[in-house]
Image (tube, rainbow over the protein chains, first blue to last red):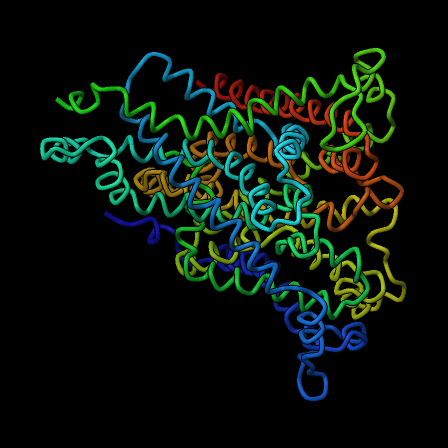
Length: 289
Length: 298
């Protein structure tokens, strides 16, 4: 019949809605624009008038030149992308397999195993980090000069931290798939592994994408684990680098604005292109279906 | 028929073992070890304990008498209250408003959600610049409105508020998206019936929208409580080491401080145990409050 749109007539109330929504939208957009425009100004000019656009003699790229010469931004990006990339791929693969088993196999104890997964969502990272650190120290992968081992010391706990959420979300999706396709594949002589890689994974590509994006972003933004394991300057990932910057150059506002811009802008660009998947991925755990 | 494929259970083991191996080594074992650690004497991160504390529950005695953990607990509870009222509250208002408009829904959703994608550390730096004492954005705005003195947003008294505003602000969009999805699931025919009966917009919200998304609101509240207990990046970037005068610690940042800065690893473990207990108790409380309400109306 009619869509809900026709029921709400144009009214002062609707205008009020637009005003309020736009005010909140301003509060999320403007601070970023503000920091971007100030990253192109000299430090003292920011303090004089931070609302002026960086035009004419206000404009300078000195902050960026300083950022690139003082901070190893490229290195930090490389570390961040490597860590988050490995975390994301491993989580998707392992969680996908576990979710497949949970949705299709019925055996004794499967319920208990699944509640173990749900329970591990309740473990905050605070409650596991110290023993994890001791364990990895005993293995010799913390505090070493080896780049790959240091990266591994962050990657492994982050994988574990993301698995439970990913399993729960993916189990929901795989359960909803019609079993007929798997039967057909089975008739053709496909093994369970073949079914997983050739039927399940291609069919659930969008949900695997949402989980992948979630794990990637979570890992990319996770400061706490990085604070424990990435102590050497050359090993720092992006968030760790930013944290270091605040304590060392806390008063160089131009440099801070440039650093924030360099970290935030790539994320915004990726977000604009993938926002549908990102929003779905980040809220998937809360919304059933 | 379908069961035929999955009658052979052996592949299930291969599918489950890698994930569970990870969780056993990195979650279950450390979790138990951490409880054990909280009764041990440990001064070096990564080192072994030098025996039980004296008495064995010594760290918990210390916690009971530590005035800073009391501040941290108070701040955390305030943070939870701010999350529930601020994040979920603002999100409900925004979600209902978006549900009432026609053009621009996707735009608002994209814009509101975006702060969640940005790392909290970067936002911490950004808000440091906004709240800067010597002519940060906020003090410059106030100056334009004719205020002559500068406000020290990180000073005593107001520091806690300064810390909570960005945390609340960042996650409003998250609950907003969840609530909008809930509102979209409401059957249009209900609104049509109300329209024919001449219900006002307010009545439609009060008697259709809000009651039908109560479960979604409950989910948001539970997520808000557990989320507030996990907050670390923003407070630590803006107010490292609980400054000023250790008055802005949260349970999470205090746990980090004790472990990494004060080198009381065992005490840090005990605080972590406390955080877990707090999380379980509080999410139970939230769940119960909302369930009871449901019973009354049923």
